[in-house]
Length: 424
Image (tube, rainbow, N blue to C red):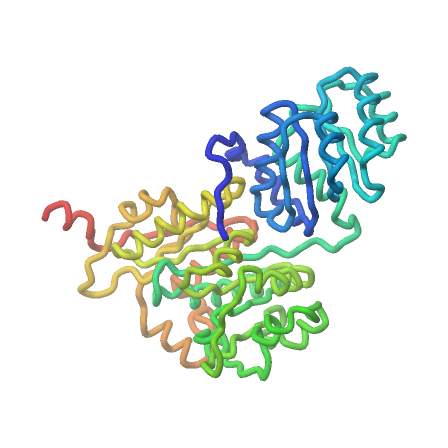
């Protein structure tokens, strides 16, 4: 479930450099961490790290008090995988206090000391005594996550691919169509492998849009999570080109599809281990597993049409995602289906300003072009490579992959529903 960190946390990272540091870090495995802090600043940094999506699997608790408090606590309790200890005392006293902890600390636990003394000889003595790392206060959120990753993520592990999650602010706004076209564009433009996962198991359309009818797909992956690995996943994929693979939804109603919150976690992790880009087509729904997928995605794209219901839903999504991911960039916005004949619409800036987002693209309503592509099982750029929407999909692909973003060419919608409401 999405949950927000402490409202008085000072670690909402606006600094682009810090965000880049976070983007380079790997998710932390299921480990237990306990911290014993003497200063509020260090405690807040560790708490903020625990609220970050990269630490979702880890179980973190922050206590007040330093090494002595930890020694008292572990005299009657088992030690976790990692113990973080803050100490403001002099080096000689710190070493004495650590001796008391050594008597109650389990051999398999790792210990990190956060100190306030910049002393190389102290660092060498601590590592000689088995302390895993010595950090000099003050510490920041990326420092904490990087340290945990260094201790518990294998250094020779292959880098994870990036996950791009697409979700519609309202049903029928074309989120799936945009996700499919962007996935195709990334594979085509950059000759880079892309895995498209259709997470709408009962009503998914990726198999139709790519004219594929695989015997197996995402259902087998989700319901066989205990034996899911890259080899098994490869057998479930349908090839849609040299660099694009599809994990299709069954699109059948022969069963109900009720999932736990982490049902898609093993699947996405397995996909990221073997593919540079994983595109997640998320249905317009709000439950535990959709929240979990959104919270863990590297990038989130909200697709909305310019009307009042879409604006309300998009605003709710943006606010919820920002609270749940305070250390990540805000979600992206694509305004789709603008210029529908005889439909009153919210003008571009009036739609995007309440969201605090600048649209990645504004795509005009063109049922003939999109309908023809869908009915022939092709992407729009395959039929009409010079179409404005085809160019927009290429721009979105550049931005989401960080490859020389192209200039945006956006046209405002025709009418202003907000203006009509104000006049009324």
